[in-house]
Length: 201
Image (tube, rainbow, N blue to C red):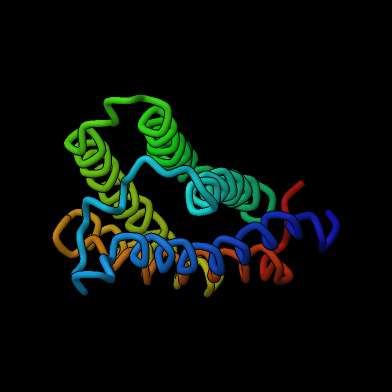
């Protein structure tokens, strides 16, 4: 196996780590009413298609690619398949969250009636809770098998556990904005560094 087999997933992870905070900064700027100097969450989802909309979709596609790459890396470097179900679930929820939100925004843009804000809210609540449960379970499995894995995978598990807890709280879920880039950066390191264990062919 070549050392650069996971170069593309590594680049994708770095891209997500950079784009994610930029996207949220742009979104919060859009949600801020500079005339009244106040913030309105409702302005986060307006009938305007622009760079943030497509950036959000790109982050979603890259996230799916990254998690698929993680599953493949665990197979190739550690012969480890215990996370397959959880990673597949993360990919599935990513499709619902990112593509679903984007399609609702497209509908809101082209529809004269717009979109009911409660639909977006319920979609995000469902996805956050599901992400939280899966992230915690994924982290617990990795921590349980920490002796079989590298130090960066252990760090990934711990950060993922913290992220999952914040996702489940909902009212503290905004912390994911700061934690997810760290998760992506750790995955980039995992993809780009040389494996610490003997590869099983």
